[in-house]
Image (cartoon, rainbow, N blue to C red):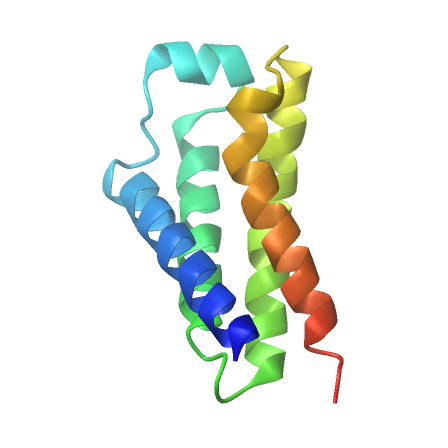
Length: 115
């Protein structure tokens, strides 16, 4: 039961974040783009991955396979975000959100293999 609650929580937050990136056409400001060396097309693609992955998390009650696909999609984006934050000199505080969701996703991924 707890796994489903966690999946809904992560899915909701990631879906909203991804949708925001898509609606803004990947534009997050010139300072952000220069600091992390990304362009608007890359951010829009990341937004699609987040939104689709987050939406797949809502199928937690019906399909472990869809949840696994969603987790992999989101962890690709989150792993890249964590790497970019550390590469740009950010510390733990700036990366805390991505690390939290990455950790919850990883635990949920391993939980899907239990019977």
